[in-house]
Image 1 (cartoon, rainbow, N blue to C red):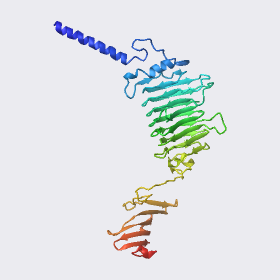
Image 2 (image 1 turned 180 degrees about the horizontal axis):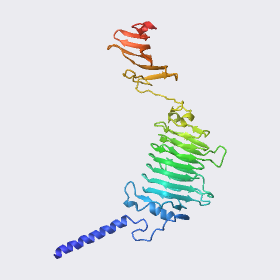
Image 3 (image 1 turned 90 degrees about the vertical axis):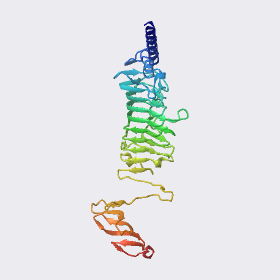
Amino acid sequence: MIKYLAIFLFLSCLSVADTQSFDTTHRNLETDAGATPVPSIDTSGTDCSDAALLALVQPNPASLNLWGPTVDLPTNSRIRICQTLTLLHAVRIRGNGAQILISAVDVGHFDAIEIKASNTAIENLEIRFEAGSTFDHESIAISVKAPRTVLRDIIIASPGYGVVARATSETPNVNLQRWDNISVVGCKRVGLELSGIDASGGIITGANVQACVDPRGGTNRAVGLLEATANGNLHQGHNLEINDVSLRMAPTGGVAPSTFIGVYIEGGDPVEFSGNYVHNSTTVGGHLSTRNEVKGDRIGAANSRLSFKEVDGAGTIFAVQIPSAAYGSALAFSRNVATDVWLLKGLSGLPSTSRWGFQQYFSQSNTVLGLESSSAGGSVIINNQSLCYNVDQCL
C-alpha cells in the first residue's frame, strides 16, 4: 500500500511540474508567469500604448507555431503609438475596428507597423496619421518586409506611404502578398507599392486609393498604385481616383508580367507606363483597358489587342485548332450586322480529303473560298466548285 501511495505522490508532483512548465512557456498576455504585469492598453487614445500593444501581439515566440497566435485588439478602441510596432514573429491580429493613431510632432521618419515575419495577418484595422502631425512624408503606415503577408479590411488615412512591399538588399523576398479591401486616402507619396525583383506572385484585390497628392508640387506627384516588380502580381477590382498619378506601372523584368482585371481609373487621372518590360502586362476589362495604350495584351472596351510569340519551335506564332463540329469555326468575322457573319472553319469533304475555307454563317452549305488537299493534289474552291487539282495551276 505504501509503495502505491509513493507512486501516486510522484506522479502528482510530476503533473504539477509539467503544468508550471506549460504556464511559463505559454505566458499570460497580461502577466509574464507571475512577473510584473504588462501595462494595459489605453483604449481612449490619450496616452501611448507601445509596450502594452507589443506585449499583446508578440507573446513568447518559443511557444508559437508557424502561423502564430490569433490576438484581438479591444473592439472599437483608439490606440495611440509613439514608436514603430515591429512584428518579429508571426501573428494574426484581429483589429475589431480599432484605430491606431499617430500624431507626434517633429518625429521625423515614422513607420507605424513593420512586418518582419512571414505568415503574419492583420485585419479590420484603421491606421490614422492625425492632423497636425509633422512626420516625414517618407513614413509608411505598413511596411512589409516578409513574404506571405495577409492584409484585409484595412483603412489608412493621410500617410506618406500606405502599404509598401519593397524587395531590397535588406529584405530580398517579399513575394506572395495577399491584400484585400485596403483603402488609402490622402497619401503624400504612394498608396500601395509593390517593387523589386522578389515582390511578385501576389494577389491584390479591391483596393481603394483616393486623393493622394504630393504637397511638394511641381514634378513631384503622388501615386495611387505603384507596380514595379520583376515577375508581376495579379490586381483585381481596384478603384483609383483623384490622385496625382493613379497608376504607375514600371516593371523591372518580363518573366511573368502583371495582370489587371476590372481596374477602374477615374476619368482624368494620369496613368504612367514605363520600362523595357511594360509591354508584357495584361489588362482585362475595366476602365484601365481604355487607358492602357502600350503594347501589352488587353481585352475589352473596344480596345482589345493581343500579341503572340513562337509556340512550337518551328516559327509558328499563331496556332488555331479548327473544330470538327458542323457549325464550329476557328475564327468569325462580322460587320456588326446579324446577317453578315463569316466563318473560317474546317469543312466536310470526302474521307480522303482535307478541306477548310470561308463560309457565310447563314449559308453554310456554300464554300465561298476554300482550299482542299487530297491524294489527287490540291485545289482551290470557289462557290463549292473546284477550279483545279493543282494549286500551282491556279496561280
